[in-house]
Length: 156
Image 1 (cartoon, rainbow, N blue to C red):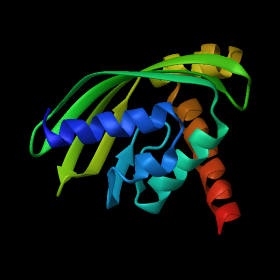
Image 2 (image 1 turned 45 degrees about the vertical axis):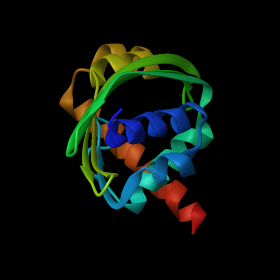
Image 3 (image 1 turned 30 degrees about the vertical axis):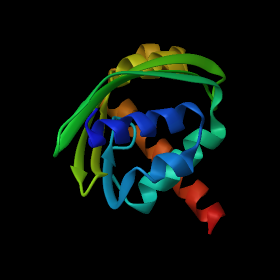
Image 4 (image 1 turned 90 degrees about the vertical axis):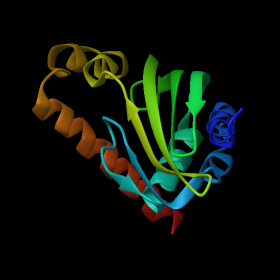
């Protein structure tokens, strides 16, 4: 297994155990992260996001597959099963991840998933009715960012 594929494997093994610090150890300090809910995080914001998500995870399980990597980049697929903390609703989120590496650490991490489908699972009726709408998605992103900022402020 390529060392960068091992880094991805370690990242998901730690994630499965809700070990945010182990996940963070796989990252370069200047890491950039994006997904449909958190479209542009850097460094400490990324670390705080994983600390927040792992600390709040309820009935959480993760299955990673398709892990591949070379000297510069990598990819994986992962399925996350959990209860969304704000609504108590069960979610199965299917995610495709891409990674860029620098000196054996993840410097760029992109997660892609169907945001409208996620809003239906996580938010229920509002997600079913409006999850496809860009203004609704923007409001969900603002709420996610506000939650992250609040979490970060409490840790200082």
